[in-house]
Image (cartoon, rainbow, N blue to C red; front, side, top):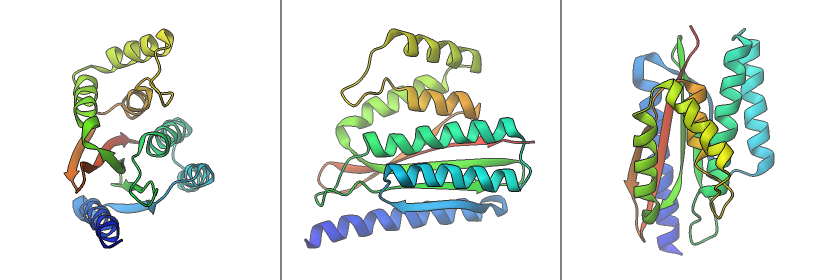
Length: 191
């Protein structure tokens, strides 16, 4: 039990570090943040709550729709593809920061080292594409119907890249027992 508490504690420490980094950059204001497990109800609640915050701040409807798509994809990635710890918990985070002309959206979750190469390669490939190529790739993947064992075809990251119109930034933080913490982030300009 001690090791498991240690791993969860390490993940919480990683989350706090990421959270503090976003706050300290250019006077960012965190408008939504969650660390822990993500039930389907929580995914829906967080997405709808962020949409309400953005509408209350008179953010353009097109930006709200793009953010909603990014949130759904990112949170579902955590739920569907995030690894579980030895206590069968699927820990992860979402942080949305407002920098007064753009949002930065950060998602993180526990992952296994065997997924690192796929994630690196997939994100690198997306980041090398221009927006038109991302859209073309999205339609190709959507049309070819090749799905992974968990139902995805890499569409989550493609959708996040397409909707944010930005490059994806990611990092891996090594943990014990062939696990790591994976964080991916992107920006969404609104001015």
